[in-house]
View (cartoon, rainbow, N blue to C red):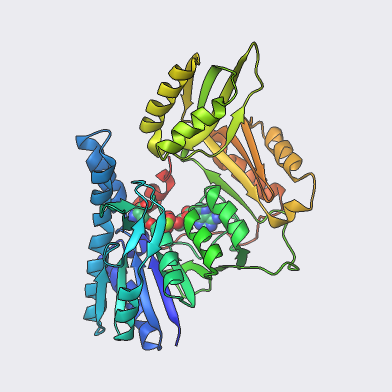
Length: 426
Ligand code: ADP
Ligand code: ASP
Ligand code: MG
């Protein structure tokens, strides 16, 4: 008997028919002799609709109320999935983030998990029940509802898998696994059979939204094996796990892109010691994320600082940065939304030189200009104009020999769902 955590994303529970299908999958697993916890996302585009609703009455809704509102999407899903499981003759119990004691910090909208009290889940499992958990939500120290950031149900699933010592965490989604690039952008992208935590972490951080970044961090820290696969078929998907040191490492395993960030530049900051500490300290105090950073060498005693940050928090970022820029005596703040980050990721980059140069050359040959660059051991990222992002991903995918022969074909999603996917992150 294995303990299995299964997570079903929004597309997988978008309609009553798909919920019935998901319930059948859960029940089949239980009847095969396993203990099953299912974590569910909000149905279809519910989260987007709730955000739109909130903004229609208040362009800058209070973070606490927003989180409580958004958490209802996952609550509806879990009740309905529990009912569908029950209709198939199995006993299911639905549990919210609060009920499973998923405690987070107080960073509304992007909370980090602090602890999880798994006893309620393990007790229900030992009583022979199937447990259905609402993803994406927790409670902070004050007992208020928090959410884990867009795509955060993946992280709920992996945190539970770690908490109950599950044998595997299966993330069911609307593609067959993790591909060498988003298959909706690169039809020649190939499914990856096995990928290391490190590479997956870089891919997720670089915008490969198929897995939430924090879920991969959690999985690595607690040794949880993730199986990312399709909820529409039984094909094996992608295993994310620890790889042995001697395994052959691809120089570039994938190309990722991220349209969700904006570039902020503070011009002409008087170049005193500690300006970066002041700017990024203020962002950190406001729980605002920062990704790539460039500080230009000073001219005439002044420096420019540019960084990328999620567009979703741009209203608050603008407030914080305009205040800090004023306090520090900068000349002005410029915010550019039409940017994209494109990254190549590969464990083999560590030992192969010239990979970054090849990336820059490939983009230059396509006439795509680069405004920021950042690197890690196994990743090189560039910021480019948003309208060139898809082309950049495709030319890099080809240049690094990742194109396969099979063309990705979407058969399961409606035209409306495909349009919603295409808009995601913009
Ligand atoms: P879910 O609602 O199931 O959590 P998501 O939309 O969050 O699904 O994630 C699945 C989507 O991730 C796919 O539909 C695909 O367009 C996108 N995606 C981006 N990069 C990749 C990649 N490298 N491999 C697979 N899918 C990717
Ligand atoms: N429903 C949330 C979202 O759309 C969380 C998730 O699906 O993982 O981002
Ligand atoms: Mg997701």
